[in-house]
Length: 343
Image 1 (spheres, rainbow, N blue to C red):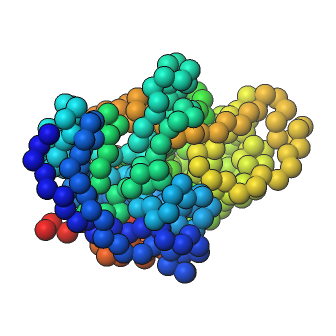
Image 2: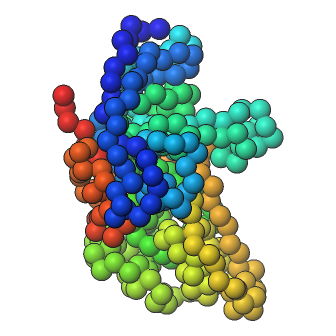
């Protein structure tokens, strides 16, 4: 094990989940101890702010334990390694993503669907995450990052990018097909670029005027209100907004045989569906549950070969609570990113 004395780490923890106006995040001081086994200590350089963090802070996503430090789109440097950690040497620049661990033995893990593992654990939910100066993670679930991406650009790729990649696969978009995207935040603006790079026609429906402007700048073929009908039938659609009553809207916009992929971990209640209007003619709905390490590797390889426009809004580490409040109020263009000071 690399020599590593225990250090104190400033962090933001969810003390009492509630509306962001109640400031559910509190500054805390945590001790980071030398890692053991497969674990490594990572000095955080940047951490993107995900809507899942907002769900955790507000209580939509029940905390797994008290005082959790959110954050699962983490870029940093390995500073210490446990005695069984052999993949990542100290000094390696890495990304720490949502999936923190799986059992490796269940039928889901054995068949390659580790995202469905009943024993899976998650960064910033089961373990303390990246709203901190240091975090500890299992190196087997940590990703070396490609060169050429600065910290703030790389951070949103680790969840917004990866989960969008999986949501696009689940949407079963045919080659050269027509994709509708509902909601246009951190994940959607990256997914749109992946679809466009594959030759798709992309139509965006979102309530934010600034998001519509961004969609058009990125090359999407149209951008309209969240409940507006797209200009042509959709082969596939992805719902990024956590708004259940958009499900019938998206299904009604699908062409025959189309697929709606729902990308969020939390969704408000879905209203009753009309079979003839929403599901008949082989339209289908698919959920998206987390992601696998293979998803992350595939997307990071894509990002290394296909430069993406990553729209970010930087925040100081000290302003994590403001970043969450801005995300809740749709005041963030693209992805909010906490940037750590250099000291």
